[in-house]
Image (cartoon, rainbow, N blue to C red):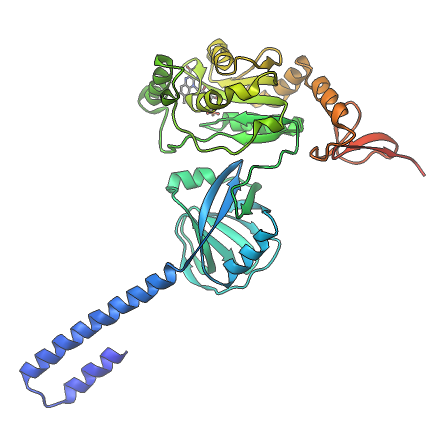
Length: 395
Ligand SMILES: Cc1cc2nc3c(=O)[nH]c(=O)nc-3n(C[C@H](O)[C@H](O)[C@H](O)COP(=O)(O)O)c2cc1C
């Protein structure tokens, strides 16, 4: 505005053309100075971030986010100092997962075009984690560090619903809620669906393993990349360098005594990504109950079983591995149910729950004494609620 007024003044003055040129040059320099000052002040606003990181944990993986310095983030930090907050978010609009925080934060809304990775406050009480762009009146909270677009989509489970997200000031080890942990890797989501079917039938925590490099297309060039990864492992299976990098995992296996491993079959072997996790943690399964489920298109699974036995040499295997292939994947719930019965999983879990029944507040849910999960407290008889034995009597 100031520059426009100066031009107007110059137009009406009786200065020589030389002076006019000089004046114009001065004005251009002034305008450039103004622009650079404006840029600097915008940068200063954008760069007013806090040294305190916020951690966003999904499926056992914690990612740091840089927080902007504003009233909303200061209130958020005060809230998180009381302890981590877990929210359930849903994908929406092809650009975000979002949902209610359960509390309100002070807003300083402005029209924003979001970038992937932005952490946004919407309407004062909703958090949005962006994997795409959207223009709206939002309050900025921060930005997830160091993930490219495809890593973000994978971390935020873009497109999925009911995503459990924990916000905290430190990376969190998820609190175990069960004695059983389901560990899986999935490239095209078959094993994801199998793991979902499994946890619908048993009381278990779940850990998904992700590759560090999320841009790989393992099926490209006739599945050549998957083969390359396996060849590297096979050439030197005892060296950590042979295994593809995976995202860090903060789950402690000490908290569990029973595990289910769900893996895709690649070239008649265990998918390389899951091999990395088991290579790093194989010794921690010693003496523990482990069940194996393998998903393939059609190939038999003996090679995968051999890989599992090599990587977890001292497991107490729960029966034969379950093979789910392309032809019977749709029937996976029944296959899993029958297999759990074949390997006597309910007996195993009943014994464990009975032993722990007197005082194990880590067990969530209601069970009868056969270890079967109940949806409601029985009107009469003994049951176990959150690991504590209780008696219901009819009045
Ligand atoms: C690199 C690679 C190699 C594969 N090799 C085989 C194979 O040798 N035999 C087979 O039946 N299926 C093979 N498959 C198919 C997968 O085993 C099958 O689609 C599985 O259900 C994938 O699980 P996911 O969707 O959880 O990743 C391969 C898949 C990939 C990506």
